[in-house]
Image (spheres, rainbow, N blue to C red):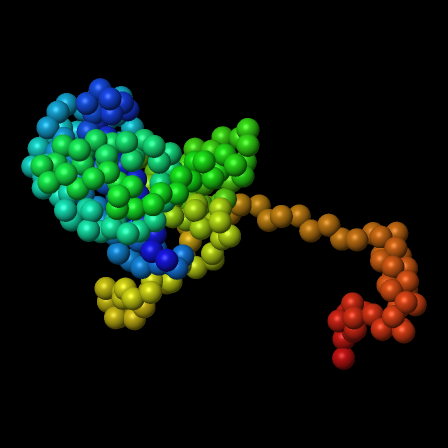
Length: 241
């Protein structure tokens, strides 16, 4: 199963007002493992960027001046995501912007749903945690995913963080093994640890059973033994040879 975790940054919030995509970040997972393959591209939108958007992602018009337009990178982007299951937080936002960009292409490749299926992790989080905050930052805190480098939004960083949140939210995984990628130095497969909150958090308290609880435990085991010919697997496991 090939999944692509995707995020975008834009010139503003409303695609209906002509705002455009300025950054796309994607990371690839196959069978719930990061492969090390990613797609990352800054894009010149050909228009000004709202100041409010710059305060969120820090990307300026000067920085994008020498970057390609969307029509110059569309084929490469679509080839990377083709046939995959996209994982996006608040998918209507990103898909709405991507569809708007695709509609402007001369070769008319169709909307995103002609190339991919989509999972919206915001919908998933709201189902699992109704009435709670389900922003990406809130989910990082809830699932112990390290977002300490997220001073500003960035499409590739946010896609990497969302991959960890998605894995934690859908069953978790303690280590993400790169399936075919090798380290830059030794040529051996490299293991990527799932992002966790920094060390130093206080340990969970260990509450020992009291005498009354221990007596109740023994009484329950006696009752089990009486109905099972004297055999109690729990007591056998507690025995030290």
